[in-house]
Image (cartoon, rainbow, N blue to C red; front, side, top):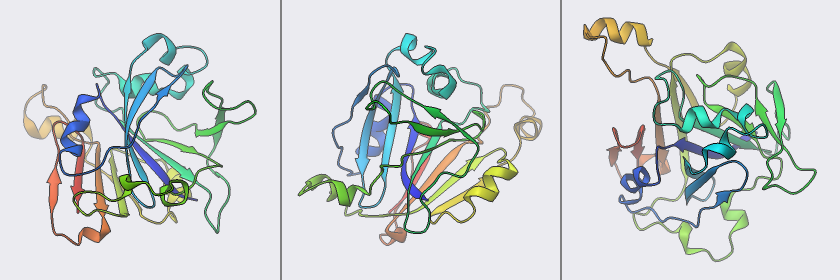
Length: 232
């Protein structure tokens, strides 16, 4: 497997402005009919980044969608332990299948007979899922200028995800994925104790996105608008 795309759950579409203001080109997003979500997308040659937000609570909590637990990730009032991230994989030259314990999600916006294997890991980890038909943006877009970013970025070279705890299954299954690094952060209880305040906002979920091995030497910390640090 290899990374197809990464999503960040945001309270609304506006939070993503902090990212696009850095000189990234936005590609046409989509409304996920029946799932209750819309997205904003930026594509690089090998991976795309998706900012996902809620537009229909009824659809997101329906029997067809609720098991994805997207609603829990997308609501602004989510518990601090809930990860706002999702990572989608696609087949690679050496691996064509999703080997995590999973269930088949069949959203109405996909053709009949097509499903998305989704990991059974809970919301305290990122949502792990697989697109058997996924392809690199550079292989699917013809003469699309959106891949030529104004700031010069081209490739995603590392995706580093911070989480309070990753299961042994997750670490074992994803240990060989190129360009993916999993880091466990300090427990919420320890952060609260060290701050001496029960009202502390724990900082356990973070995405560090490295582009082109950071060749420009520029790093942008987009918190608190987004749980995202970008190195270009």
